Structure formats: C-alpha cells, structure tokens
Image (cartoon, rainbow over all chains, first blue to last red; front, side, top):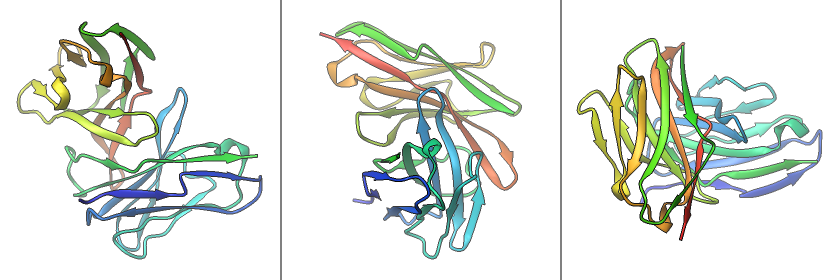
Length: 115
Length: 116
C-alpha cells in the first residue's frame, strides 16, 4: 500500500542546532507539504512543493527550508533551531496541482522539542 | 481571504448519542470543504469532502456533513457515537489561490470525547 512516512518520530535538540526532518511518500504524488501543528492554531503551512526542484514558502516559513531532488522526498531543515519551533510537524502529499478538491494524505508526524 | 471557525475545542458525548461538530467558513470564492480526523499519535486522514455536487456528503465510519451556503456552515454529524470515534476533528476549506498555491485553511480542531 502507498504511504507517507516521517522520521524521526520524536526529536529533542538544543537551541541553535541544525535539524532535518525526513518525509518520504510512495503515492507518486507531485505535491508535498510541511505543516506545523500547535495548540490553538490548527495546522499552519510551512513550505510546499509542486514537483522536483520546485519549492515555495508557506505562511510560517521563517527559519525553515526544504529541497526537492526527487518525487518521493521533501526533507525539512531548521537552520538554527529555536524554542519557538517546538511543535508537531506533519508532512502531507496530494496528487494534482490545480485540484481544489484534492485530498491531502498525511504522515504520522514528528514531535520536535527544542531546549 | 478564507477562514474556518470550529466552535468548541472539546466536545463530550455519551456512547450512542448524536455527534455534532460545528464548522463555519468564510471564502471569497465558492469553497470546497473537508473534514479530517486525527487519532492519537497519527496524522490526519480524510473523513469526507464537499466538492459542489450534493450538499449532503457521506463519509467513512458513518459520518456525514451538510453544506449550507446561507449559513456558511459545514457541520459534521453522526447519529450514534462509538468509543472508537474519540479523536480530534479538523474542518478545512479550499477556495482562494495564493500565488501559485491552492490554499487550504484548517480550523483549530475539536477534540471529541466519548463517554461509556
């Protein structure tokens, strides 16, 4: 079965360190997304990609970067981790670029704690 | 601009009772609307979606939602709650485009507790 996986599932790091969260999907979807989930805010979009070598900023992109070198993977990098980036991070994918009705398929999440 | 408001961050129902989770939206274009469910320690998964066909949408696990344009609402219901329905539920709207991106806005979620 197709799926979307994230690793690690839990991560504790220190302020100022660089951290990379992995996301891998086997749906063969063009679109991939990174969200963060915080209490009282729901899901907020960090970055998104519509295909290989395409990356775009979302609404809360400061301090984060992504790169897309193949269809399956969209790693999220925190350049210099800050305590405000403690959150649960979700990766998602969807099939078509223009589809307003597209379903997004989510990974299980990564819980990141920045001390 | 678009937004989603979910009334009630926590809802408790007895097993077998009606489940009603409220969602109101705003959108400057005709919206597409979604309900996603998140079980503990898992990602979100689609329950159902409205795509401008039938206004009453049936989803998985016995859930349904009705699109009411006049009330800008898309409330989620289930006639009889089951213990396995305990989860967090997110309403989302897809309407406006922001640059090249088909923007999806999620609500803040409603945690459903089912009491035996």
